[in-house]
Length: 330
Image (cartoon, rainbow, N blue to C red; front, side, top):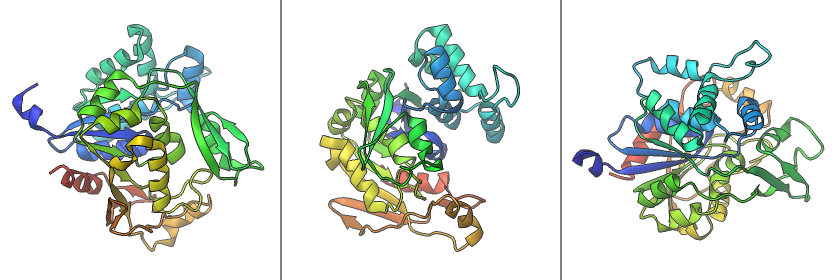
């Protein structure tokens, strides 16, 4: 490691899915040392099949983070399409993505999930580090307000598709069995200058990281401040009727003893008037998350602005997010 790299600020992004991908894509353009810590509770699609059939940790969110940090001499879109490509035919391959199969193969070759991720990072020439939050196999369980249990990340994620309890709010989530933090993730958190949490599905991508034993403790020990990125839209079955303050409340609850480290909240407060853009979401009972936070509330600085990327769907703009985040460590 050279002198210049030592001086670079260390930013750790905690989450999973497309939200973490957008943040990493934006931040890798800056001279910072990036690390991604991703949840290991995914149980659906290709990831779920490989997890059940091969007994490996879920590779899906790892794959996305590696793609985001890759510096292979391929067009960014080409690389993304290649590793996200899912086979549509074949009894064995149907539904699997190329990236997931690569990580699964490397896991069997190396015999360890962390070594597989490290090797995949070399193949993809990543700038930064990608860590699983834990190497312990676990299942995410949600308890609804009516006391009913929903077992498995996918069932929690998709329960809004129907069922008599689809509109019952989530009371809490937990991991079974309990999981312990991966040493690499612990070291990254404790050495960070800034920890960025989100955006992503609150109860199935963000909170599962905070449920791992050792994560709140590592955040508390770290000199870093924590920045929470609030989602753009509510997620049916997870965050129905949520406002920005609800995201802060839930994040603090699961950060436990480290809740006072939450210093910044980044929230979009400029949504387009385009009815066509929002109509797709309204069909699925998803709506823009409204900011109900003051500029500074309970010791938390609220950073408001337009963080949208224009397009068919509402997405965070990697460049806009990155500019806001970099200001916090400048």
